[in-house]
Image 1 (tube, rainbow, N blue to C red):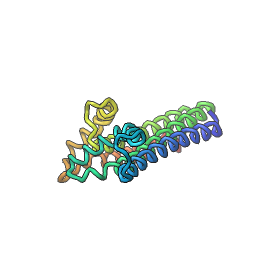
Image 2: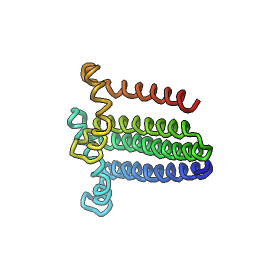
Image 3: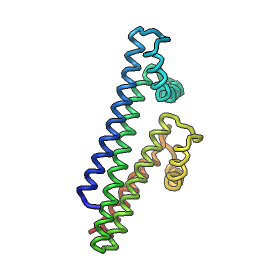
Image 4: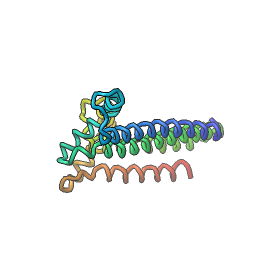
Length: 197
C-alpha cells in the first residue's frame, strides 16, 4: 500500500467520521432547541427528534442521575462524548492505516525487524485507545452486559488488573489506567529503539 493511497483512505475515514459526528451533534442541538421552542409535544417534528436523539441521551441521563448531577446536562454531555468517540475512531483508523502502510513498505524492502516493529507499535497504539475507550464507557456507566464494554474489559483487564493490584485506588480514583498509558508509551519507545532505529 503506497503512501498516497494511505493518505486517501485516511482522509476518507476522517471525512466519514466527521460527517457522522456533525450529524449527531446537529441532531442533539436540534433536540435541545425543540425542547425549549414550545413545539407540539405530539407533533411529527418533536416526536421524530426525540425518537432519534433520546436513545443517545438516555444512557447519559441515567449516568448523570447516578452521579447526582442534574440530568438537564445530558445533551451537552452526549455532545462531548460524541466528540470524544469521534477522536478515538479517527485515531484508530489513522493508526491502523499507518501501520498497514509501514508494514507494507517494510515487506517491500524485506526488512523483517521493521515489519515486527511497526506491527508492535500499531498494536500498542490500538491497545492504548482501547483502554481510553474503556475509561470513557465506564464514566458514562455502560454496563458489562454491553458487548463492546465486555470486549474492552476482557482485552484491557490483563494489563489493568495487575496494575490495580500493585497500586490501589487513590481515594475514589483508579490510577491504574494512567499507569497503563505510561507502560504502553515506554513499550512503544523500546520497540522503536529495538526494531526501527
